[in-house]
Length: 414
Length: 145
Image (cartoon, rainbow over all chains, first blue to last red; front, top):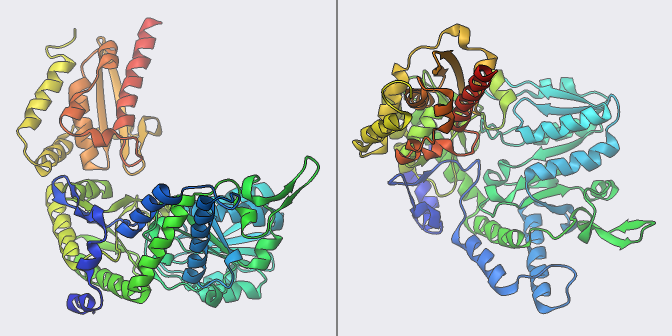
């Protein structure tokens, strides 16, 4: 096991913490311990500065204006697109579409590619550990087009097997949409192997990277996925910015999503022609400020190095797992061999909501409930879990405080 | 007027009790204790009709009408929610539909439990209060017919 000392030697967590103003605040009179990073991460000062600089320095609508402010805003907006391209290893900037989050990225694909390609009897494969956002859009599509949704079962450890996946693939499989890292369990799924298997059957693959984009090094060309979606706010960026990556030839063939604004080339009442990629999918004035500031978040991550961040988070997860498992009555939910950033657990006789309230009284923010993965909770026959999720600024002493908080809550509740 | 203490009187009592606590842990320890002591709701009343849906915890709430007054009984799988219900029952039970419908329930804010009234899906205090008032409205309509 990696020790606290070793991790600190590769990462100066105290220096990193100083860049996050919110970590100085108190909750119910106690120093904030923020362990709800899988829901959203906190934002470093550079991101806050970028937002303020945009609004105080060069706020303007992009792409059309010829004045200085519009040019500066456009340049900054498009610079984020290049930064995202680098961040996920896409081959071209045209493959990066800005959305408002992973959910919109999935809905964009289900509404456009899905409507054009899914017909009666066609099959879509997802897994039992998907977030509602990677279930419901496909259900809506299947209902509308007569498609069939197939679900890969998850075992007690919180993993699924490639054999089970393979057995669901048929000549009617058109799409596989799979979560890269489970938000409820932390499981890292073998997406690269799955993509190979799916491609062999002629299916396209959407990878839900909402959790993986902050914990793992992402290279969409190496994965060879057809689509990849993630959210800026989970990668230290502002809320309201998401990314849809798609292979260029697939995006080019896809019908448009929303009409209006930047997505058009020429409009007449008889016929409208659409703009080229990526603008074809970016109707209306986009979320300029947050997209601009998102680059500062990506620079922040790159500045530390994703490998170092992952090393620190893995050490936190291993330490927390070891400590929590010593608590009587506590069961870790999700014991996959490969996990990232998330520790979900239940305690005998304790409702997760009660635990969440007591921890909050002690300044500790965790998530409790079904984590928008109700079908998964049904698999485990539990109403929900308590989830601690880690980020670059979390410390080993915060985990000690979490353990103390849990023990105190158990004393109060049982 | 029903009973000896008004809704306002009971609210004042609870506010005074909470004034004795100087930490959040103490407040919640008391609420947890109330939850543990809440009179058991008979299994026959744990029906889908009596279920108040929150996102995380399940609450069952039953109401009984006798001699112009309403009595509430409830249960939950989460103990803090149960404690909060226990206080609501203490305040509202034994009063007439009109008194219940007029209740402002300001004590919730005064004792610092407003967060449980927030419009989030994580807790159901707001839906519980609404449900209790709905029962009052229903009984009122029934008696007027």
